[in-house]
Length: 188
Figure 1: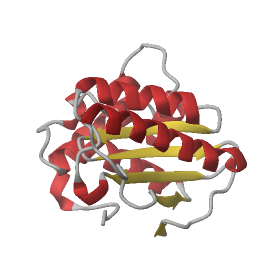
Figure 2 (figure 1 turned 180 degrees about the vertical axis):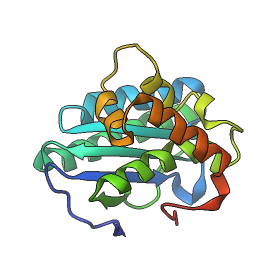
Figure 3 (figure 1 turned 30 degrees about the horizontal axis):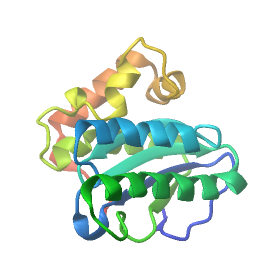
Figure 4 (figure 1 turned 135 degrees about the vertical axis):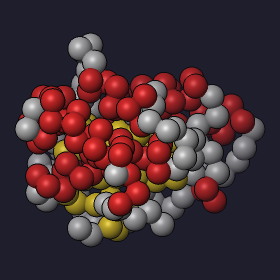
C-alpha cells in the first residue's frame, strides 16, 4: 500500500483518505462542526465517490471511498475542504490553512485491505484514547452501518466484505479486544 500526497486518483478504485488539522490543531470545535462537515462532504463528494467508512476526530478525519468520477472528484474535494475551512475560520476567528498540507491517500487494492481499513478507521477513537469503545463513538460510520436507518454509506457491500452483518460485528468486537496487537496504516 502506497501512502502519498500525490498518488493519482483512478475511477472505480478504493482509497483511504485522511488529513489532520494544521500543526495538529482542531478541525472540529463543536458538535455542530461534525454534522456540518458531513453535510458539506455529502454536498460536494457523494456524486463522485461512494463512501464505505469514516471517522471524525477533533483534529483529523478518515474516509474509505471508491471513486466514481476521478476527473470531477479532485475539484470537488478542493471545494469541500475550502468550504469547510472558510466556515471554521469564520466561526473561530482564525486565519490561514485549517488542514495540514494536502490530504493523504492510500490505494486499497484487495478485499483483505478493505476489511483492515474499515476496522482501522472505526477503531481510531480508541487508538487516540478518545473512547474506550469505538462501537459507541458518535462521529464514526460504525453506528450508521449498524443502524436500520437510511444511509448513503454502502452498508451491504461493507457487510459482504466481512462475510455478513454478524461477521462484521464479530470482527469489530475482536478488534476492540485485540486493539494494540497490530497497526494497519501509519499516520505521519
